[in-house]
Image (cartoon, rainbow, N blue to C red):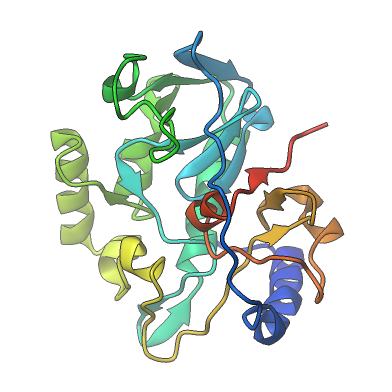
Length: 247
């Protein structure tokens, strides 16, 4: 997926400030509190009202959820394809956004099977696990589509269908499956490809929130003296940040 020129310019300028941002001292914070969804297991919204925070995280119906069963490269992550570093993280996030924006059907999401029981330990209310949802648009499963299009990896053991989609994408060398990349889980701990720059593209607003460069409001907050620059939404949550609410 091609990345719009304006977004490239904003990201390039933001990435150029990372030398200063990465020098920030680490601080100890209380992790962000998962959204209160105790009385709700299903969420629905028109596609254009759903915001992709990154390639496997969305903001829908006022709540931030991870897409169940997939792990996409982080927004600042790059992959090596035909000996060239490419912005696979931004590509994944924009592809996820494209699914929602271009659909004539509303987006429907439900909590993952293991999180629908309020008494379960994996329901996201223990502060350790974040709520995960399975989303569809019409008869199209979003997690499956992201894997089939080579924009995300399946989480082992979640779905046989997802595993099969990944095998087919790998055989065809589609997207991530035709590139060299650091597994997202390792990238989040600091591992990088040779030559890959250290880019953390999310930004905090100084008021307890963070914002993604895929969000149209990002241009208002991307600046050299940004108070915090998380490398992922997982890191943002660990730092106690919540996603910037929509007005």
